[in-house]
Image (cartoon, rainbow, N blue to C red; front, top):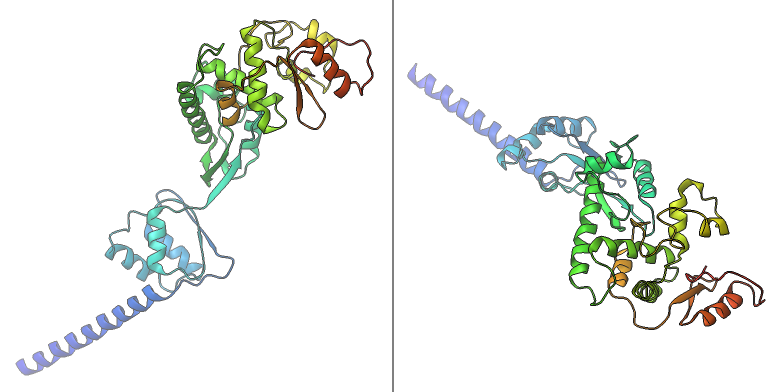
Length: 348
């Protein structure tokens, strides 16, 4: 009887060893075999709180793996079963199970982009955010004050506060988080640029630099001219001359602007953005200035020019005197025909 028991125990051990060995061979083969993914790739979306077992079951159901248990075992053996990160992943052909786990633990999710264009207004940026299908929209229906309060900056005017650039983000990023990131980017840039500003500028604080930069941005057609345009505005401020720049008036008109500025807008419209009537800068920025515009505002080009006029090709002709400027207006704006006109020192 004892001999029979020994034989049964030995047989059981042999079968168990065979089973373990066979499972180990399956595991080894599984770990070295690429996932079943076609050339277009496989989109894997993991929502927050999804356990590894459910992820593996979904992959098995879609034919990406043959046995979800092997992936779960691998995650447990490697101690990463609870470390996978939520997000959207694009799995490419040739990916092996260990590489998949590394990807999920590292959180290398699909990144989308949204470019905030220099010169956009705050409302144009909000419209771009609202139209982006990869953003989680939470700000619909809120006015500017409510949006800034949600961002943590109650009472601040939003214009100019967000840095234009291309932002990369994962699927489902909230519009609030996107705006906070763009706000922080502008705040960091403004702090750095203000600290290295040129001496003798007629602006008293970083916010005024932001206002001036936004005007420079809207007046610039050729990027290389930003420092020259900045120089004109800085010299006008130093001489206590009115800026007389059309973009500020257009901003002040808001929805009432129909594409044409009329004389009554310049001389009769009484609003704080009418730089034909007010002295100094308007109360807020009028657009989102680029890093280059901010740099130009704080490092304007040297010179004597106090006027500029658009040539019609995006560039400007700069003049030191009103007489020179009037001649440039006749040449570039009136097709060379001298006739009575009211010269706009900002060059429009």
